[in-house]
Amino acid sequence: GQQVMQIPQYQHVQEGEDFTTYCNSSTTLSNIQWYKQRPGGHPVFLIQLVKSGEVKKQKRLTFQFGEAKKNSSLHITATQTTDVGTYFCAGHGGGSNYKLTFGKGTLLTVNP
Amino acid sequence: DADVTQTPRNRITKTGKRIMLECSQTKGHDRMYWYRQDPGLGLRLIYYSFDVKDINKGEISDGYSVSRQAQAKFSLSLESAIPNQTALYFCATSDRPGTSGRIEQFFGPGTRLTVL
Image (tube, rainbow over all chains, first blue to last red; front, side, top):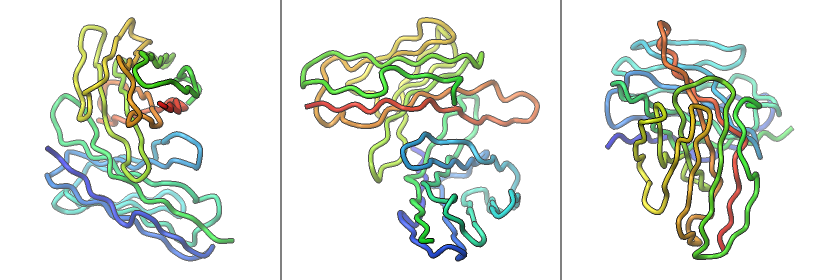
């Protein structure tokens, strides 16, 4: 079945440093989504990427979808303590079932 | 999301007990999902339902069953709980994709289940 690998598992940065997490799918994806889970909270949708090579920005967050639609990345510029949490990618393989396969997530901690 | 509620929020039970986790939503979404989250393992799909008459197994359905009592309610049951079912359980909903193709999922606050 479809697998989504996400690295790194953990990342600790100093406030102001940049951060990137990467996702790779074993199969071509129809689209990929990103979620953020704050400590003690639940996953919250950030964005969905659909097109090959797509790049989207949300303030300090930049999301990319690879040309082959098998990989994606999330980059945070100049991290802040409010960025702390676990970031998950979730791939949709296509078809009408709309199931998502989640990566294992990257836990970001930020030292003020 | 306040529109997706889960009860109970925390539960401690013993091995062999039957337990039901409940999920309700006021978002009017057709699609509902149950996930479990374990440290370092991300979110794994247990069951999903696209309407009241449509129930599907996810990747880790063994030891679990579900019931879709209404569009707004989706319950997860552990028939005979075992310690390795100790985890954080999330219910989620999603709407039909519509013209945008957007299929974001909205998660409930989670139920922390401990099986002793």
